[in-house]
Length: 101
Image (cartoon, rainbow, N blue to C red; front, side, top):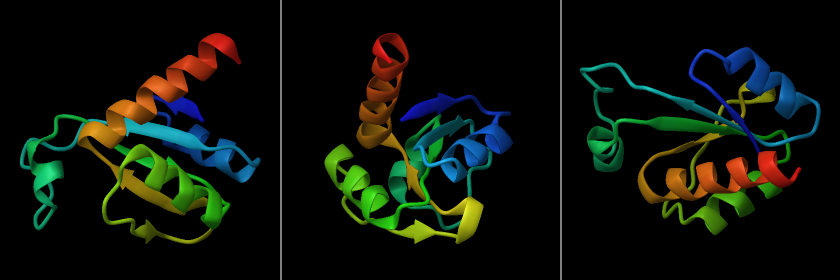
C-alpha cells in the first residue's frame, strides 16, 4: 500500500491501475458530506483506498477493521472509503512500507 496526499488523487489512481494499492488521504470540506456515516462526520481526515483487485480490496478493508465494506466506483476509481481507526491502521501500514519498501 502506497500513501498519497490530498492533491495526489490522479497519482493514486494510476498506482492502483498499475496493480498496487493506493491510500489517498484527504481533508473533507468543513461542512462535511451530507448523509455521511458518523465516523466520517467526526473525522478530520478521510481516505480512499484504491485497488483494482476487488477481492484484495475487500480483504484489506476487513483486515484494517472496516465494519461495513462498500466498494465504490468501477475502473480507475474503484475504492473503499476509510476514516477513524481503519484509516490510522492503513496510514501506519503505508508509511511502514515506504520505510521498508
